[in-house]
Image (cartoon, rainbow, N blue to C red; front, top):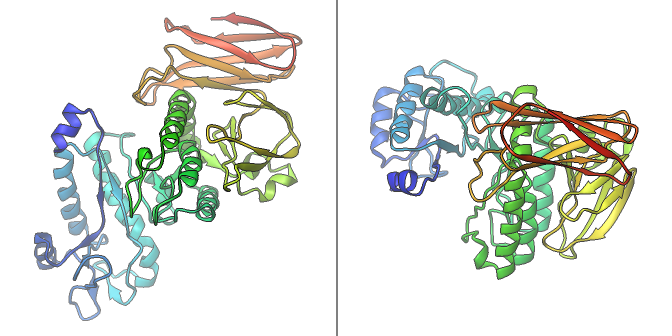
Amino acid sequence: MLSRLKNDKKVQICVWINPYIAQRSALFDEGAKNGYFIKNLDGSVFQCDMWQPGMAIVDFTNPDACKWYSDKLRVLCDMGVNCFKTDFGERIPTKVKYFNGADPIAMHNYYTYLYNKTVFNVLKEYYGENQACLFARSATVGGQKFPVHWGGDCSAEYTSMAETLRGGLSLSMSGFGYFSHDMSGFEATATPDIYKRWAAFGLLSSHSRLHGNSSYRVPWLFDEESVDVLRHFTKLKGKLMPYIWAQAIKTSTVGVPMMRAMVIDYADDPVCLHLDQQYMFGDNILVAPIFNDQGTAEFYVPAGKWTDIISGKQYEGGKYYNEKFDYFHLPCLAKPNSIVAYGNFERDFEYDYLEGAEFVIYELEDGKTAEAKVYDTKANEVFTLTAVRSGDKVTVTHTPTDKKFTVKIVTSENVNLEING
């Protein structure tokens, strides 16, 4: 099955795992015999039924247990698995003992770090430096070194959608670079209205997935418009991939979270101190998801002239707006004095981000400079475009290239464009 998906369908594969070994698994006897599990105070294997009957928990303070667990994962990599969804890791008992004698109270939080580190290292060793990627839920301090993360089992309702954003912004302010969530919620099944609004939010997150517990989250099970809305925002994310990829790389190298609270970028604006229903999506785009069935968004725009990249509408900064949006729109505003690169997206999210790209310069003010970088899918910088405005002239310079691209200026003023490169 994996071979068919990987080789025939050209699908990259992530499989779901956890650190628990059920008693009826063949691996249970193997792990118990060799001392690879967390133990009770009397030395017996700790077991519980909180996920699988009689399950044990791998002791990642034991180097031999780490190697044993890693070897099992390498077998899956040999079969074609690209990454692992490291679920669980938080149901960790405290009246137990570890191989290395660690404090069990401290290990309750630290366990998830060791668990994700072990899995991440397998992928890094197997696929090479900068090619490892997890899809992790539980995390603690330092877990940002093993990206990426998602928010767990949210509910299919607007209040949970809003909580998801607040939690994600809090996670980002704690040092984590990327976060996502189950679009339309994990528990229960959303209404078509919630599904469509959450799809817009989810596809304007650092990574996106449709997943749920009690029903399939494919759009045609909700209504026909859900198909159109999901397609619309999938195409928008596909077009934004040159920008998104550059921002993701900046996050991994500089450490600024990709999705972040407004206060991080606008600490001098007192209004931004408490905003928790909108966020900056990278350096240059503001997103305000819609959290109600009336389709209204109340959002704040910082100083300057901002441009909605979907509708083209301009917003004067320094004030709140309250507007109604259809399912194909939400506030998605380009910051003034910025450049957003749009790629020639067709179907595959990994493509040549420079060939056929359009670089849009938004409201560049006199004396200001803006820059956009483009990277290939292996994270190599391949192109830089810089725009400088002096008076009524905008001068664009760029890395020499044989690729074809276009440059566009969005401005409420009359300016002349000059391109050198």
